[in-house]
Length: 101
Length: 280
Image (cartoon, chains in turn orange, green):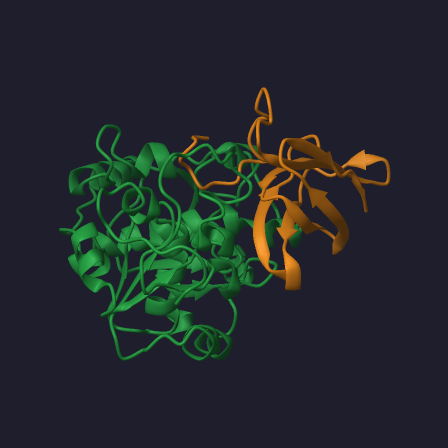
């Protein structure tokens, strides 16, 4: 993964040492007590506008570097599993959203 | 050219696992996904290491492409089925690349890796050993690729389709929201460009929308003049390869180019015009 890439590494990129001025949204996905390591987390704006998507990491984790504001987090996993959460992102903060589906 | 000539579904792919005339290729920037499990028999192409020049900002030349395909055991007569993560961004880029170098028997798997995973289809960690071939590419087809001077000349004349997210288009972000925002280039978009995010062309499971929906999206909603030539761009040229695939391969528009320099080049050029905010 490189800084100038556009890829979506599993679970997002490694956490920076400091979030600086970035608005970070991260969390983990759990189903029936086990982490969900195969699935996708999508960040959506108003009107369901797609913003970004990452595959879940081996630990069920995901991370986004969003603009500050209100977002919808949607999780998709095999077996038709899906969940949605509302999330508020703020500059300089890591917002944690753990999702049980 | 129609949709069935260029796009196949997962059932087709499953039926052709082991077909000696079909080579399935997973293309990703982060190839740990392939290592975790891939479509049985699929070989791996690393978008960064295999398809980009290691020194200059450019993709591998004809000789490099020939060496790559020969080493992966792909011959000129093989049908190549491409798929990958990120809703097929990098697979679409590789598709464009195969076309640039004259390989016509190339297909994209609708929905890519995501739909395959969400359908709980079989994944394998076995790495196939394909015998080496002697692949011969053609010279690059310049009709598919736009370079910066051509893009500057196209302002106000051709359709310019910026396929990044609205926040990148308007200048609020420099990169997609799953990446750090540390880049130093100027933000904004090329004047007269229309913003049609790549994601609007795809369903939630990564498959492409129907031809009617796609025509409505570009012609109806965004107001593209299908009678004009078109250049698509994003940040580094892979999301716009996805849109190039839609416009050129699925909808059959004749003159569509991908500007692979995209915003990381344009947004760093000295003296070029840039617009901020919504499309004018």
